[in-house]
Image (tube, rainbow, N blue to C red; front, side, top):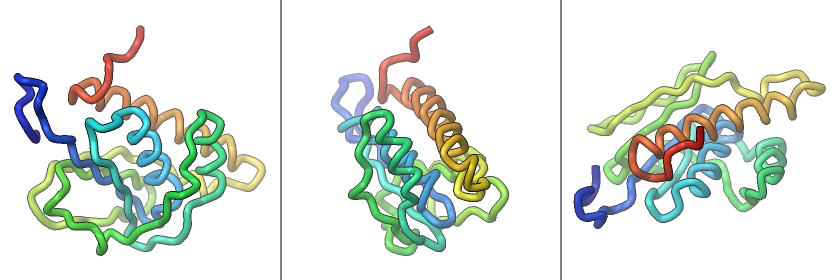
Length: 151
């Protein structure tokens, strides 16, 4: 980990969320992590075949008061992995992007909510948002990035 945890003087943890299109799961993870971790983390997301940010991802985060409308889909090829501490892949059914180099890797498999039938789309996006938030709160608590979860 960056910095000295004993003194509280540590550099932000540099987190990269990856999926294929960088349109839904990784975008929601980026927005939620920025909100939850603040300056304690530098957060970015990318994909192996980036498209555009899914409007449902923007909508379900807006329900929580988060505005991610300025986020854009990015290619993993544009990321300097040497400046990343942790890569979290979010793919489930599809093949996740791979990044070379020495970096901590976590895999949180989640179904792509964009693949849901139209009539279930918002519900699926909400389910993934809530799952991401829960995992991020746990991750943040373990890494000293957030307060421990309430019981």
